[in-house]
Image (spheres, rainbow, N blue to C red):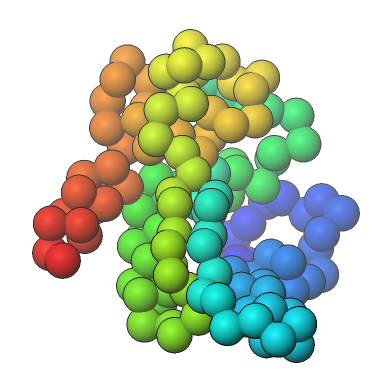
Length: 135
């Protein structure tokens, strides 16, 4: 993203920052071990600080993700995983860590919450409901 301001220690791309290549590698390792199981993705999501009053230390990358991008990328990821033949289950991280932590921006889980400050649903919340209803 040329508009991104965060240029931390991970300026160069690495496979761990790409959902598809990471999951493909996990599936490959399962196959190499002789397994046939599909993956169960227990936590995935995108952090955004757009509606927060601060940023957890070390999570400055979240400043470059808008709430619209959080929504778009989460739904794209679900659509992709639905199409890939190696994913069985996927769980979005996270529903309500924001409210549980009082939207404390020192907590690095808060930017991932799909419920925003003052209990306002972030755009991804409604998009997830629509995505699920369409199935």
